[in-house]
Length: 266
Ligand code: SAM
Ligand code: GLN
Image (tube, rainbow, N blue to C red; front, side, top):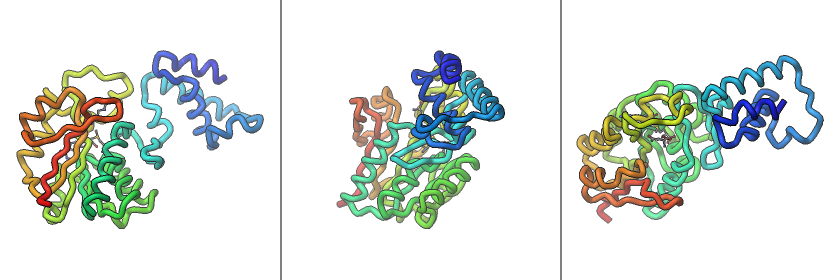
């Protein structure tokens, strides 16, 4: 069965066998590692369900929506349709943020466009900061809240629906660091099929992909704060025109993927 199924996924993913195993373990309710421990009996109902989900995946539907979770910073985060699936490059932003939090003893952080809560929940989990998170999507707010509960940080992770930092105006002065992985894809970009199942407002940043940054830096006075945002790999030159004193940091693949601004006075 696994061979037949993985054949169906060959054009869709580079890891068809792994994806089938993950789907099977999801349907059977066991860990992937345990699939090989004993002779598994798969009931006809389970087999039907597995085939149905493999067909769904074969149509390009994202694996992590089928599985209902995605690992991020070693944490299992709930994800579902309508919410952006966290990406590995964003883990590097979180690592950088945690270093800065330790270095400066930062206590209050914002996460704009929190999605599943990936950045905010993991930063709260691995430090003692308070996080003020926002998202324009009600679904994202709901899922982020569940993820904060799931990882025991809901007393330090506050999420509200709205644009940028509007929902936390009263906290703005106390926020020392602003984090974000905003939508930065150009509206004309051709994206892989599975990415197109993700919400458009999570991906597209207008014609040149830079609408979010333009609007954020136009609206907010960030003096006294640190700003760390993910960017598209070809956006440095254009972003320099928007934020002239920004520094750009490379990811582990050597690409400029983060905009960094340290406007702290000390
Ligand atoms: N931070 C999550 C992560 O890294 O996995 C989600 C990132 S996703 C690329 C961008 C998110 O920003 C989406 O959830 C989208 O709904 C939200 N968003 C887009 N524009 C926004 C705005 N102006 N204010 C707040 N959230 C916004
Ligand atoms: N890296 C995402 C992609 O796969 C885009 C993320 C974003 O816009 N923040 O297309």
